[in-house]
Every structure is written in C-alpha cells, then in structure tokens.
Image 1 (tube, one colour):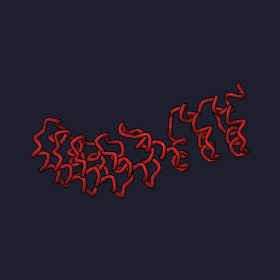
Image 2 (tube, rainbow, N blue to C red):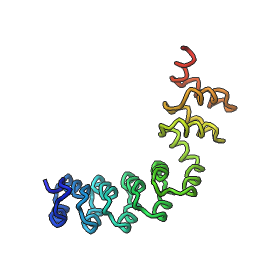
Image 3 (spheres, helix red, strand yellow):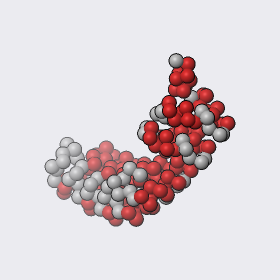
Image 4 (cartoon, rainbow, N blue to C red):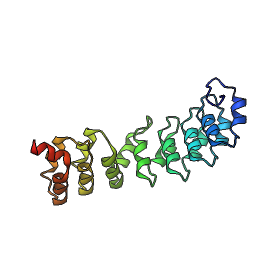
Length: 193
C-alpha cells in the first residue's frame, strides 16, 4: 500500500491525500515521503487523527505547524507542542494555551526555554494537572513543597508519589492535605506493614 511505504513517490501520496477513506489520508499524513505541500493540504482535513499525523510529520512546514497550533481540537495542538521543528513563538503561544495538558506538553519539547518552563510551572492549574499526570517522583517531591494546598493534594493523589513525600505531607500544615495522605492506599499499605 503506497501510503505505508516510506519510499513512495510523493506524487502518488499527493493523489492519495484526496482519498475518501480517512485511514488512507491518515497514512499519507504519517508518511515521511509526503511533501510539505501535501501535508499543508491535509492540515485542513476534517479528521482529527489525520491532522495529528500532519502535526507529527517532520516534513510539515513551520507555517502549517503555526496554523495547526491554533486548531480547535486539543489533540492537534498537543501534537504540535511536541514537534521539535516548531519555533519559539509557536512554543510560547502553546505554553499559554487554555488547556493545561498542552502547556505541560511544551515542557517536554527540546526547544523549551527556562522562561517558558518557569511560567508554566508557576501556574497553579498547570501544576495541579502536572501533579496528577507525572510519573516522575522528583517532580512530585518538588511540588509537595508548593504553597498551594491544592497542588499538594494533587501530589498525594498521584500513585507514583514516593513514600518519603507522603511521609513529608502527612505533617502538612493543611488539614485537608493530611487527610488526603491518610486516604492514600499506598501510604496505608506502608504504615500497616
């Protein structure tokens, strides 16, 4: 199937980009032989999965990535935020997205600057989302010292939080955080063993 073949003729891929079947267009958007012009065409596709593949493709032009970074669909913007070919302007805009998972995704981009990292990390809503989603115990340890008790509660609710961090939070000055620790099954297993 030409849309799967990474050595496919870009002209054939261009023709296939207009196929009625979204799966064919998906594979064309995913293909590393697809031309940037074809990818630009596919960036207007009605299917979110096709657009996500365009956002991931190494041949996608910066202008196309900029357009996709403003897409209404969260998964599309999230894929753009992971693309190492985006410039700082796009990365900066995505780091201020209304969707916390997109802001957090910019932190994983190789082009993320310390300024972007600092701003994203100072936003409490982003930090709560980060505390719930991360699997990194060091980040959870850092967040366990945050001034917002909402962030500290989110740390406690994360299964990947270390026993050391839970022990630290069991002495938190906020009663709600301490009660969350006492309801954490990992902590309960630790203190009863």
